[in-house]
Length: 164
Length: 390
View 1 (spheres, one colour):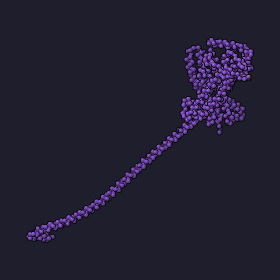
View 2 (spheres, chains in turn brown, green):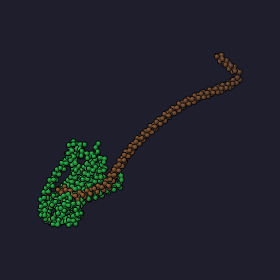
View 3 (cartoon, chains in turn purple, green):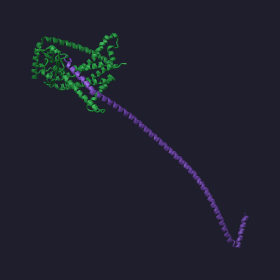
View 4 (tube, chains in turn red, yellow):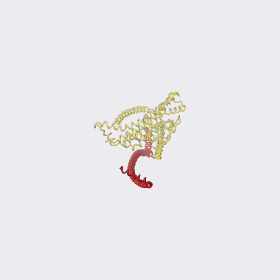
């Protein structure tokens, strides 16, 4: 029976002590502690969100970088290709021009050679004719010293003419 | 809601238990009343012999060969006391504070010399007795042990009935110790929070933080909802108050060992706080559910009393659950220790110690569990009272 009979002293002191405990802890412990935990949780949440955002930003930047790189690479390839075709075309043109120029030069040279040849031939002819005239003159002079020989010569010449 | 159905069945069960308990108590009171009436006519003889017996008892105690009575020993440990027993015959007296119609009376319980002597206070002469059969009036709410002795050396029933005992008993002292410990612990932890704003918890702070967060996230939030902040200080205070007193009760030596949370007065006050908080915060839906339930009008005659009993029986269940669990734990541990003295053999000691160890570990679990259950049910009752119906 004693166990289930509360005594007023203990009821009274428990009431006083618990009420004081509740009020003091609420003011000096629970409110500051729970406030601090709440604030910290919020700041952790915020930090995590920020980290997530930073990660996304990072991924975005990385992909952007990759895009840029790819673009740059493509552009470089394009430029190289262009340069190559340009080079080829220039080369071809140059070749063609060179050929044309060469052909022209060759033509000119040919004409020149022809002219030179003609001139040389003409000169040779002149020289040959004057030389032959001189030779002939000398031969004639020597030949014509002797009367008999002159006559044979004329006879030979006449023979030739007759044959013609 | 499924949870609600379970709860309703639980309330029904508690109502049955409550009725049975009331019936049980009324029977017990009857038998005591009979004993009292039998004792009163031979009061003078009893008072004479009481003195003689207590004298003999004291003499026996001095010889050290008294008969071992486990029930008496266990009940002495479980019950409250005006002295704090340390070991053997060593104990230190606690202050007695008595309210008498002529004013307060404060003196040390040491003057009674364990009930062997009467003490002449400034208002009356007092006698201390713990034995129900020698008390005449029996034990009541206001005063259990202290009697006024008249000029003729007999108990003055009229003056005794007017005494109100506000003494700092063993349980009150242990309770104060628990409260002081809680204040020191949590105010220093709050200081740590102020010092380390936004940083990770450290030391004792990191031990307590998960428990506080558990009370908030797993007890308050799911049961009360978004209005939990207002009730969190009460829930935390109740949780840690019960926990620390449960744990102090498990320590067998001096500042611990008191059966604070296993005393019905303490659990009564805690349950009373819960009842007050639930009912002053109850909204219109809560009161409508009690006073105008959704049943045919002719059912009101049954339903309203049942609902009103429910208002009382919920905290009543809280009170009895905590009291019974903790007291039962203490009784089991003490019974197991008593086995050694009952068998008067060292042989039984290892068995006893093994069982006591097992029970202590179990009680450690129970200490947390009962603090949790009390807080959880308090949160549940508050949640039911503040719930908005749409």
